[in-house]
Amino acid sequence: MDKDLQTRILNAVDARFDAQTQFLAELTAHPSTRGNEQSAQDFMASELGERGYKVDRWEIDVDDIRHMPGFSPVIGNYEEAVNVVGAHESASKKGRSLILNGHIDVVPEGPHDMWDTPPYDPRVDDGWMYGRGAGDMKAGLASNLFALDAIRECGFAPAADVYFQSVVEEECTGNGALACLQRGYRADAALIPEPFAETLVTAQVGVLWFQVHLQGLPTHVAYAGSGANAIEAAVPLIAALHEMEARWNTDQAKHPQFGHVHHPLNLNIGKIEGGDWTSSVPAWCVFDVRMGLFPGQDIDAAKAEIETVLTDAAQKNDFLRNNMPRVIYNGFEAEGYALAEDDSDTAKQAISALELAHGAVTGGQLDKVSITATTDARFFGLYADTPALVYGPKAEAIHGFNERVDLESVRRVTQATALFIAQWCQLESL
Image (tube, rainbow, N blue to C red; front, side, top):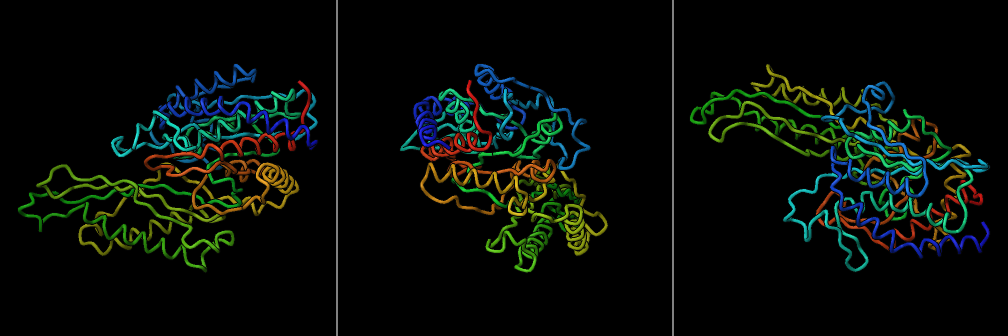
């Protein structure tokens, strides 16, 4: 790329960074937990429309996507589960097309009194913006949008079609990104600025969510010995699942991209409920589980092993052996994805373009990492033959209290994204 143009693009990001920070604060102020994304998506659609993009705003219809590979069982009601896409249609189409993807949904914030300041009242302190979703991943959505703005400020537009995607459901199924594929949005590459500290994610785990439903035998606590405590029965089952987790994490079982990672597959008991009365032996218990999977690990085989583990553990309980636990899969059925295993020329060229952009901004090499979480990259890489680059800013305490994102890192990622777009898509005059 011409050095003068490169400098102009970098300076254009700097010139609008105060506006970008204000945009991020306004977006973070929307409490866009699952089912409550509409106001944030309205804001995003409005911003895209004002910039002249062709805006597609639609409600996801589960029947449209349930037959597609990568679909995950739906949690709750999908009414008003809204995706937004802003399309730039190139006049010349001389470059390579691009999807800029990010998710608008955030995880629940937990007790507000455990935050230093309200989670949806974003604040900036010592170069960090605090707020639920500021890092995961509204800063990435902002960097995608303002990277395009910087190119426009220089009098250019991408010389290929670009689709700016703001999707829902990333935190529990990924069905929002899947709905974009069903809608027909395809490109030569995808960029997803998830907050992994300016590194390129070359492998990510898959994720499986399931619930275990247990029955007990209720009785007055005075006669507890004649009942069966469903909550206490969950304890050995959870222990058995952790033993399975340990087996899956042995060196012999690890995927090559995770050979250097100490414990890549994490099992989490994320929620447990049970019982109706303190002085009654509980008749029921339900606990929710998240389990990681390696790239290439078969989901059906993983389910079968999980169910066998639970059945074997239940056989050791006098009551459960005649009242077996029931497993319900709800939420993530996500396969792992390894960009590192994509040896296509397209993937190599996309990675090279990002390496050049990152180097031009930071002066350093682009580090590559394998992560123990999942992202929407799998949909593009596994089901659309589209290399998906996950590269975003530095954030801390995502999914925790006092979530925050490093604003200087956001600036650098925006600059690198703008240079990547210019290199990958090429440019045409406005």
